[in-house]
Image (cartoon, rainbow, N blue to C red):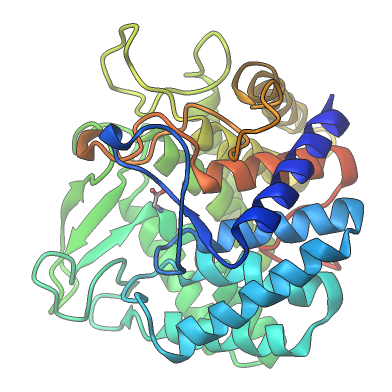
Length: 379
Ligand code: GLY
């Protein structure tokens, strides 16, 4: 089952690369119809498309995919050098599956330099007065100056990796302080999570939790919970600090215990359900990768090891069977029914390029033991 799903994904990724060249998939608004728009490299999501090229190249070895990925890397270099639309923390999402990937797959030194320069850029979002990495906007931004979001746990692996590569402890120290702050303020006592938390930007005094893409401030946005599962498991991988592993486990259990009948989540755990409630297949693809990562760190005799591996496999079976576009050779996306920002009418029910990436990453983990591009393979 995994093999045929990967082959379909690789064929679609190859077709997209051939047809759209150096353009990247973007998410449409609610009224713009289904499918990707193909534009330039100016959002937070382009790294995922590059990562799909690398995963597909690792699977089948088609040199065309490598050529496309290397062309894209020039664009990622230009974007960093010209500082295009990088006033946010998603530098890890952009540069891990693109530049770090090229380094991991083939030891490309230019790619390593690019990933390290990207890590430097991310480091500049550290706010020592508050002890966190600012998620969005410029320093001092009225609305966002004191804001962290749970998604950042997937950006900080770039920092841990930069310390490994350079020996400079600053990246790792900041990643750890940010992960600790996230653990304390974004994870609630019942193992659910806030999407976002605000601090007073001048002295770091905590103000309160909230949401941007979830249903309401106190609800649990499923994708945020999934970012937390995977992100804390990665912080454990890099640091060996068991508190991160336990946090990943708690978030994963909360997620697993609230799965609907077909094992693919709705966009928020607290949204009222009726036949029109949107799913978020991308949250389930991320959670599947996170649970596979988590399970890999648990002891052989820990029952959660099998439990989370089984939940991840069940999720992937449902994504392949009920959500994938394997029934449509012309589709440009891999899984249907993702949601981006439901209350903002942005991509409430469409392909999400990060959903496609994590779907393919999970398939590659299951079939080939290839874990994506968030850490070195020899670790
Ligand atoms: N990182 C933004 C999102 O998950 O929509």
